[in-house]
Length: 484
Image (cartoon, rainbow, N blue to C red):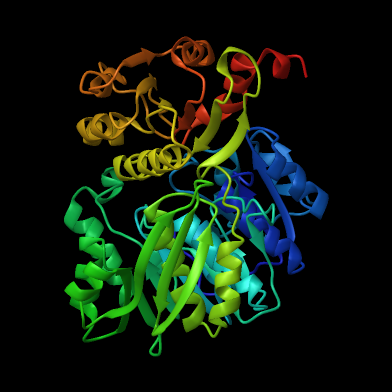
């Protein structure tokens, strides 16, 4: 499946249109006047929102869905990972001779003609992209954007702006980021992942170097100096592309040739947020983040750097960052128990599904508890993908051991088939804190109720269906809420 030289976007059909990435580009197509149709396995809020904007969306996959808009589409968009090749809509498209392209090919077309600000990295892409968007909006730049999550403040994952910039995530999981030609490319970190696709860490590292080589002639690469592999990338390519770095003072001093933005200080606030002073390309500015965690300060530094390089006013950009209220499923607050045996328990949900991400969220949660002076961390974690679980079982156990009580659900296979003899116990057997393996999804709220104590911080965590449990846990802990 390769993108044709010229893609006719007048009538676009999208298989899996309700997904975070697909629904975003569908929104932009509709804003630009394209006829958009699609299908998904179920109704959802993104699907209903797209229908309200004028898209024709079928529930379930069938060959006749290609004509749901009244005529055959000019192009069909799919995902290599999520959509099997025998999908009836793909089969029909091939029979009809309709071009079939990836979402990345479509996004590449939409990016044409804009100043492309692309955020790449193993972790932190969605948060950093979201911060960049909010900062630019506050600076009056009105960027177009496509994000892999939903901005809490804007309530959307994509927008067709009037400004010169288009901000988007550059997904490396299937090397699709090589479809783009960035003017500003941010690399938050690089850590081996998606080895089911890349096979070796070396191949995974190489895709980021290839991405750097796709910068425009006047483009700028922005790398996190605190991450050894991102910093090494900057050092390797600095003779052929312009590189700026961001990070803590120690990291900046270790890479004097590529430093650009320095995090001067980080202080946890009594409210559990973070106050930071950051020198952005020579100018110091203070930011107050509502979200805890040093990793979020680094994301903010990346966003400010990208915003200034794109022509934004630093003071206004920083105001936007300080007003950033987060992204859905990134340390997202779901509620607090105010009465009864679990008084003071707060429930949060997070998308973390890699050991490094789990560790960062655990540390942020610990900072939040330290700021208020009491409470424990209780986590319900759902591993994502059999391949990732087998690759990082020991690392997941080490990260989860930063909690006080651990409940591990069974593996969410997503696009992968079960592996005989493999379940989440390959993680739990290495966890050093009190741990429960609970394969019964619906039993998890009751399990949380067994171990939670007043004032605890409860986290549901993972990239799969575990997000559905946060509100169920609140109802299990708060009888009055259950009666609402």
